[in-house]
Image 1 (cartoon, rainbow, N blue to C red):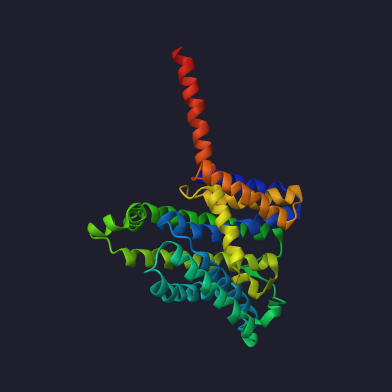
Image 2: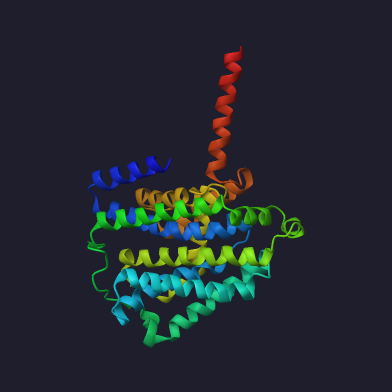
Length: 313
């Protein structure tokens, strides 16, 4: 599967001539990182992290402050932003992860509002309401990310690396502990799992991935404003996760592709896009809570069952 994804990415980046489509694909890979970070909490712990946009915004502002204010290379600015996001996640998680369900979601949402207000008022650091723009040439090594193919290949390679890391985490002892908490928190605690510590570790793991996604969106947007802390970004990523399926590691990536490509080809107005995808989410949650992955699995099982019945006849 990994080999097929690599081949598909190489063919796409090499054969597609439309520069905007290639750039949009790079942005989709970057935003898919944000969706993956949300799925760590939603698919792993069953929590809805409405405040995950805080770390996404830290990544975006970290890239801007690092390159514009501090004169750092883009790579160093991204690493710095990821480290800041880890510290922020440890502090926020220590305060909020004793809450569960709607209480955790609402408190994390409120903290994203605090982050937005801070970005609006700290004008000397964040640029205030106008945000940060006028970035120097953004590069990863010798590769200029303003060039569409460079941007796509860079974001796709980083996305693949993160998926491999999360795949290893899922099969580790830590991954087993997270799964046991998701299945039954009280039962996990009764067999010796430190529920709060494991939840905090999952939250901290999700933060730098979200920050990385936010930083890699900057070469596409070329501006960072306080709206990057808006919970609307989290809702978009949540829709991607739910459409692709929380049980599948690459589900958020599938959702990100659908969420980005379909509106472009159908020329959908943003408000119409939200209406269509919201309706799709309602239908999926009612009939297939596992997302498109569950729908595809059911269809495959029915086809296989139908063939088996035909063969037997």
